[in-house]
Length: 501
Image (tube, rainbow, N blue to C red; front, side, top):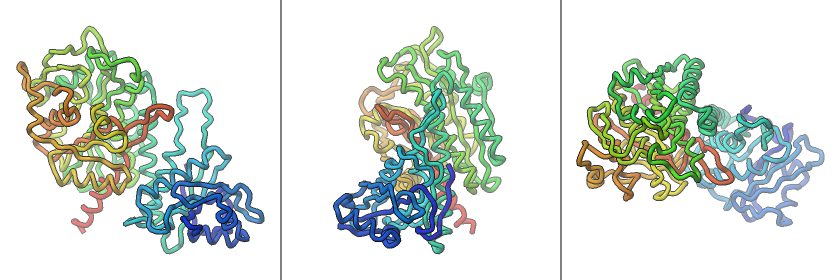
């Protein structure tokens, strides 16, 4: 995709389509007014005859504009003529790009950044145009013989004035980096498990490291994991013919001795449940159990593109969870890298076994903060649906920073309690803890399990089990929470520059 900022007068543009806004009560945005004047009142004629009420998300495509270099104009409803909420701005953008997928439109100029959005500037508005449009036109074709995609859009331009050009350009750069990070995440997640194996993800990380000098990649193999005592992680891979990988990415953009932010992403490339076998319906979607790991790769890509002045460590424990004669059995007891023992009551609660050893491994980096991202519990979807991701953690400041970043990024999260009372559910008669705490509060008890391995640093856990992919007719990866994580890192970068400056 080609992105640019366009400051030329609208009537001089040569493009397939210009997107302008219309408010309720037939009120035109500034760009809509300018186009109306240059087209002999064409837009007002359409609005006045009732083809568009101005309700947020409504669209009308004008396919012929006599005497104009512009081939089409898309009118987008913005609602009441007042500053939009961030959600309604995104809703209008999404309606716009969805209206342009099927027509033979290759180049688009979007004028919606001129709309007032509550508490947001031109940089934010421009960034979201890039992110929303790029996300909407993504279509997975890698394993199809017919590579034809629904959308033909190749170029997206954000219309801006000379006054706002600098902010708009900054937003474009951010949006491009985040969009490409999300696209990498979605592409990896949408691949089937027979292609996207732990080795394949490791190869993608190495390729990413080759592209960016600031990024160093190392792969920890099973022999080294065994020497480190990662009995919990290795117990998961015993049922698979694919060797487990612990993928480490070291991004050095900050001062040499500055403490890093550690991102840990669950990278289970397929989860059949092990001996505690899942039911067949929907099991194909368990290829998405590596979305946490994919989001770490996507976020590191965005950070490297933006050259953020931070030190960031990415850790991706990757394996498969399959039934086999050597697989974990319910009742088995394994010893984690920390030395704590775990009774395996359910082999389908394997993600926390990957993560707990990786959390212990993260201690060697003396981190400023640790955030793990995992498609961990179906219970999170039951509790919160597919709108928000779950957040739990042992540090209020870190959790508040992540929540604020989610609000800015339009990638919301909701904090759940991590109270000591829930730890009682993890008691075991035979080990230091059980790997499950029963059906009640499953998302919370899973985080309680992880919390026992995160006592030495500030830690937050994102449960993305219900938000990492869509199911049904629109099945596919969402790329979440790359936008949230990128915004958190951008915020941290700004804060570090203000402190040092």
